[in-house]
Image (cartoon, rainbow, N blue to C red; front, side, top):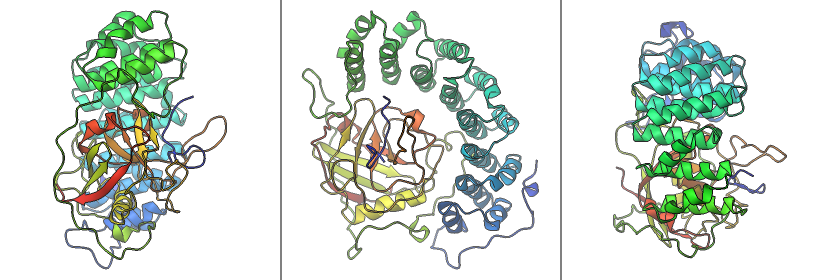
Length: 499
């Protein structure tokens, strides 16, 4: 059974822009904005968090302020309201790159509930701006996952992007998106072409994305020569993917292929190789790491973080659901490049040091992409909520998870927060919120069910991109993840100065 991040009782981890609507429309702004705050953003956060489609959103999308229009596009997508499809589709023809990119990303978010146009996505994959092509790849993946009519035909332009796009981030995202064709009629052909692309690719980041797609969706596709090349690749993330691919293929000589990786210089590669050898021997993957296995060498600790913590505010009371008024909105969301569709906006960001019994982890948070999620996390940090809680779930080559006051994955603070889907990848070292899962034969994540539980990724988990909210990533202390077991705890979790 596939391991996924859940929380709670169910094993929980818990054209011109003027054509958008009315070009002369104005936006109702909050009566007061904090100094440095992006005008109009707070109202957009209020509406998207309550899944409210309104004239305010469509008016903001038509604003001459590109920062406001782009942020409105994301908000419209997050409502998942079918009425947002028309305005967002029109906005994909805007002159401003960031508006086109966010409109197409938001348009893709609608696919879960509303059929979207594969032709709009195809045009996005051909856009001159890499940021837009990144959004189009994500939208194609969402459309195919939702079995949107016509989406299956998007495999061909994605494959063309995989081998021909000049931007490595776009090629990487195309590889990830193609994993959505794992059950398609032409899955074998798609997988074979991804394997050929891997053999011809020289960019290290693109290679591990292609290797991840092969592992996740097409493990039978690579030849043994490709497998051997992947297991000896200079990039550890490629070796990790192929170590698991060997286990998924279940071939008799797989153990012999993996034996050299048991002494790999990378602790993550050794960890996955050990898991794969166990599977090939008839065993199970580790679902809960409670002790460091004999012979496993954990990563060397990094120098301790000695930065002074910011003082905690007093008199805050019990944890509660954050409001839009508490969101930090000083960073303009304007992703004009592929890199900005894959990371934070320029400027200082809030930081938190997570002290643990195995060392400190420093995370940098991205409120421009996930304002309420960051506000929720910081509210809990300021109240000392996380101090002393156990890492109740540690899974090799997957995640470490905590944030439950009961220390068993069954609890939270009694409220939930809205999901804030964004284009940040679930790559190594990101921090994301856990979700509840539905019960039954095909369990799936429940949107808007996050609370206090969060996880940090040990290795890339790109299959979680569609549903889970990334709200930051590790700045220092990543090696701590390789030393944690499920008896370890957070010690003190505290804010650091912005950076």
